[in-house]
Image (cartoon, rainbow, N blue to C red; front, side, top):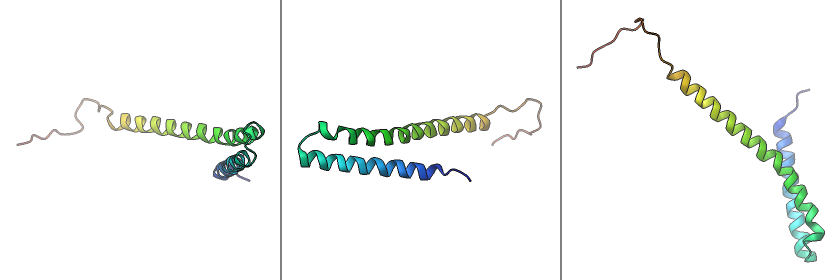
Length: 88
């Protein structure tokens, strides 16, 4: 069975949102942030891997773009397999 990473991302994001909403509601209802601090930490713990994975994907895309640009601009060997054309 193959592990679906997008499902994990969806679950972590949803759990983080639920914890944040419950934390905000309880903080307003009880007027006590210290009592609900753990809910905010659960939300942040769910979002940290998401931020890390997004950063890693952006870095990998940047490296791939640089490699593609270098491969495109790679100098061709001298020796003339291509004929030069003069422009008028």
